[in-house]
Length: 280
Image (tube, rainbow, N blue to C red; front, side):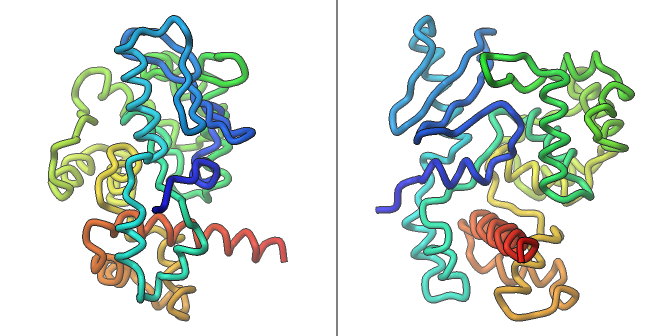
């Protein structure tokens, strides 16, 4: 039975300063609904601040399970892609689950920050933002609240090297705080959620699809993503320009309930091979 490898999963998370993985233990700085904040550790068992109540521990346990995808049925996924061109990904990334964001608002900010830049640069800008507006908890930071980001203003946000994306984050944060942007789309159909989100300035289809996957664990993927197209081109021995968004949807869509996770594995494969290529 395939268990979740938290080391592999954490390596695919956004390095934003809110978490760390060391000596086999995952540590995440969390703010709870009660207002309490602290660091939760997971090494196969959960470890909480001593003064947290049973209800607070339950909330934190659910958040960490969501972030790390601890309930993901990898055996069923691996069975689904066996005897396919993607079967080699099982050995390549055995035990890897798709990480998610602790909150929809954090997911939106981090997805906006990834627009039109490579993943490494996006990670640096998100880390800059967390240090700029987040609250330190020992060696980690709590992700900035919407209220704090709204207080900063667009010019201050630009200090994180977000560029034009700072304006999007600021305007979307204002709408979110005013109750005009609903991010709690847990029960919405994917097509309806995409139509809703793309009404807002700064949210295109790529952003909406990635938000739904990363923020809400919807079974969807950004089919127009460069890394995803490039990964499929490598696997099928094609040139990048031969793989269009519609091709991605046709190929990955065959895998039903596992298409979102398959897309994530392909993205991880592309990042790994690109890193190896740059080293060469």
